[in-house]
Image 1 (cartoon, rainbow over the protein chains, first blue to last red):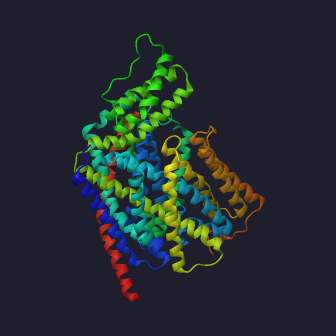
Image 2 (image 1 turned 120 degrees about the vertical axis):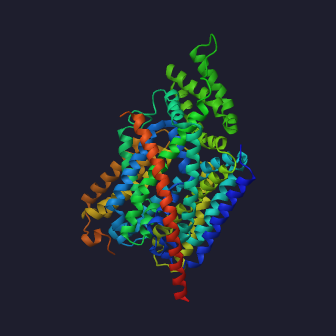
Image 3 (image 1 turned 90 degrees about the horizontal axis):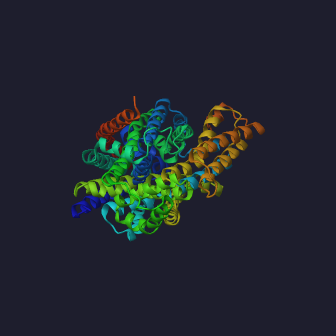
Length: 549
Length: 48
């Protein structure tokens, strides 16, 4: 462990600078439009920095690295999908341009103009629910990164989480989007520097050949062909294309950047520039995950059986050893001692066709995959440099919390609470309501993070909770814009059916692959929208379809 | 082209473009932040 005094000084100074700048912007915020969309004054470069730093947090590095650790280079296919979709949205202005031109502040606001107030509230509820579940696992995963790399004892994980959340809460609740844009710029510079430092260390110490060697030796023929691996089949690829399309257009924190842009053209330029950075957002941390596999699995020999021991007896022994020894070794970061045993259990379970043992081995590998990257960073980066990396990672983390707090609280306050109150709030009332919602949201995710156990890879959990509302929202907006018969009844059916299919993945006992759940969600949402609209067609003229009030 | 060659190209392209665009954002963003604050400061003066 190399985290020394100089690293703490760099880390704390960067945090203090961010909070100070964030708080200074408070005096400029007078109206809800200043607060939520920075009075629509965002330029291309600040917009890009703000969008990317919101969408890159420690959580992003953690789940992408875990995905790389588990799927090898096959995971890179997600990066390719991201750049293609983001670039296409940026060039065409698909959905983001009409929404920006309507001057809405939240995505569900359009749904009220097009369908009805109740559709807006339902969409807001779904977004608030899915978004909070999604955000709810961030703190516990991020705190693990921080405690491992900074050498903080595991018992302080909850405290570390709380401090992180409070920092983001302080300046977001007070300064809103303006504070976010300015702090995001500083945070982007720090996180980009941290990202490049870790990548350089991986390449110099492990190298591309070390990474390819690890995939060949330890992934049993998998890890190269995305169409043959880890559920990354055609269904998965199709779902990812749809999901990223929705993410780029109707994900509240992303869409808010388009709404905050000076004009629609600036919004499109931000998305085009962001597409390049989003390729790195996926591929670079996935490569760190592969480097972590090489770092821990490379130097140790495979576990072997004892003389005279039957495969079934060996499987039972290895399983029992892991049951007692796994947790302490994981917490000490001795992954080089764990990996050979888990690999041996996987091989024996496959040979003996024991599904319970195979499932257990898979779960253990997923757990190792979640912490392998931070343990590698702690072991690889020297003192001084690791302080800079930590500053970058904390910047990434705090900017993500801040962006998501603002995004989801805007939806809860503007699209759920405010319409249900049935009267127009004053500017100060709206600001107060949004700030109170941010505080409540912070409390919720702190509790959720402590009580919920993520099923399967975190990457899948995050995408399914997002899919829960993104599939119906995008369909309701696109068909609302381009299909005159789309009606409120269709929109209700779309949201209910789309969300139900995604939730099925999270319910224990329902055996549904992530790709199937994702595609089913899109299919049912479309079916609901079309069937409901045909049953009771809407009577929207062209102006209403474009969201005219 | 093998999968490995494709992934090597994707990886190095992503690292290179990330570094390049980040430098662009750092330089261009500094100017925009300054302009943003100047605009808000002017608006504050007008309000007073």
